Length: 342
Image (tube, rainbow, N blue to C red):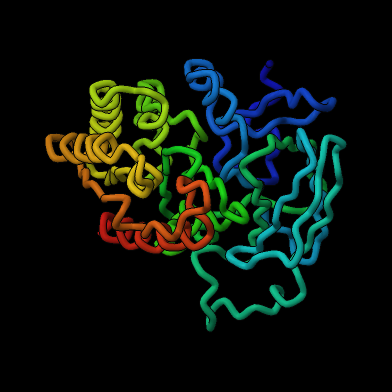
């Protein structure tokens, strides 16, 4: 895999939650939207190396010039759809894409053109900001942007960002759409811009993740949901303690004024089934609570995942939150984010 372009290859748009552009592999030309650079991805476990190249929380953003029509050319590794938003306002229909590059024409909807932003609540985004919001499960590539437009300016997007690391639950598994994940909901509720670093099935609290998050200067508050993947993949409690401690302390020490919120295991089958290993789940939760309590860096706090979501919010696998669960987590976490940033 080679570097196709640098991030400034598309000067008329903003690439949100994108840190690297790579050759897609499924089609000629274009740039796959990756959430971390290869120096980070290549040091992850094999599963995470693949997951982090999926566009959870990635967006192409732009503001058309007046009534201009903007043509964005996009492809995906497999058939999938994405949703255009105008600020916080959801587009009426999703857009289907696949391996063949597709031209999508977009202009400010007629009703949005007349929106009274001075007298109405538009949320944290200016409604003229077009946001192409991609689902987390299929890699996508940007091929071109034509038409008069520019990237959003400060004041048109939230001025603070929430970075979220975690498992498939963080990435958005089982949410009906990417904007219904708990990360998207929490950021919306707190008036923040979300940065999603969820890694389905592979959030193993690796040191390279800790170092990467600590080195970034584009977030104001971080949540670390740690980590049902380690509880379910045979890691010992001591292995979890060592890795989670390095992650929490490294991120917290990177900028002492940035709050870091550790989230313990959400309720799952270990808690809810007669043959579940409740003692193991308890040990993982208590270990993370101890790590945060003993952390003498920055502004750290811990939240019990069970307090954010009741068990009935899960899907039938008794692991992943459904839409109701995502809503509950998002609502509770929005309150925690707001409180942490005061």
